[in-house]
Structure formats: C-alpha cells, structure tokens
Image (cartoon, rainbow, N blue to C red; front, side, top):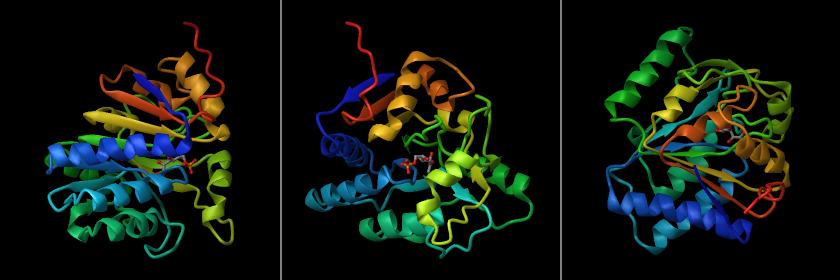
Length: 244
Ligand code: F6R
C-alpha cells in the first residue's frame, strides 16, 4: 500500500485525476472502475477539466460501475446511473455502450450478478479501480462483515450508510439493498486508487492503516494488493500516527 498525504483537498483530487488521465493517455483502451459518493464529485470535475485541457480522448476506454441501489428507476436523482450520467458520461462525452452498470432491474439477481462478473472477465478485468471509503470502512457497498472472497452480489446496507447517503434522496428514503462488486472482485483490479477527504473519514483511515484483513473494516482487505494507492487530504489524514 502506498499512502499519499497531500497539502490540501484540492491537491488530493488533482493527484487522483492526474493518475486517471495519465493511465488513459498511456493506455487508451483502459478499463476503469467508477465509484460514486460526495468524495468523487470534485474528482470527476477535475478529471473532465484535465481531459479537456489536454484534449484526452476516452473513446477507446470502457467503464464499470462499482455498485448500484436496488429498486430505483434509472432516472431517479439518487441512482448511481443518474449520478454517473451527469458527472462522468456527459462531461467526458461517453457513449452508453462504453459503460456497464450492475443490472439491478432483474428479479434473477444472482444470475445477473454472475453475468456482471463474466462481463468484467471478458473485458480483461479492471485496469484502474477508483474507490472512496465509508465511515465504517466499507468499499463499494461491501459493508463490515463482508468476506475477502466475496463477488458481485446483493448486499444489505447498514443504517449508518443509508443515513450517510440520505442527502441524495429528497424523501430520505434510501434503498436498503444494492448490487455491489465484491471484495474479491475489486482485488482483481490491476490498480486500486482510493481517495479519502474530510474529517469524517479520519477514523476509518486510521483504522485502515493499523489493521490487516479485518472483516469489521473491509478496506483493510486491500492492503495486500500489490498496487493499492491511498490519497488523503490533511483532514482525512489527521488521525494517523506517523512514527518515523
Ligand atoms: C459508492 C461507493 C461507496 C462510497 C463511500 C463514500 O459508489 O462505492 O463506497 O465510496 O460510501 O461515500 P462518500 O464519498 O459520499 O463519503
């Protein structure tokens, strides 16, 4: 695991955006795994800004979404599809056939989850997976208790996660379930870049740094990955004890 502690939130965001852009410039056929959440919003703005500035083409890239709520119409503002359309697809000018979303509208959820895994394999796997982190250490929607070997599946969201995400819903009625790539799925990505900003993430980051393979904080499973980078702003890094 490599940790980058930046001097400001802006710098942390810029570092991650530059990593994505550099990857796409050097490997135009990259497969990128996308996350949502408040942390990612300024990152997607900066990515689009850098892409425009450097005239970067995304037309040969393919994108996989990490997770999606169950039971929401696609155009509902709280859905991740809506979020990604607005913040990634439109600004980068992507076509709908360049991105795969977890197929949450089927009743055969186990079958479609397996199919999603198959699509990932057929695309050659994810080259660069972007991740945020939940206050409880979740990654994707792999809540505490998730297994390291877990694959794309139906997950139940904790009350804490539903509360944290309630501002995306006008009636605060956050779905209780989602389809999420598993930890085992995420660990197969060739590179994983986690961005954490703000004081609300400081405890989770401290825990991540001090524990390994701990089911109560699924992010700790990533520490054995050979190419896992965590980019922090000063607030997210504020509880780390660096003993040099
Ligand atoms: C969303 C996702 C989640 C978020 C996490 C942090 O696709 O996968 O794991 O990354 O909940 O969310 P924010 O950034 O809103 O604190």
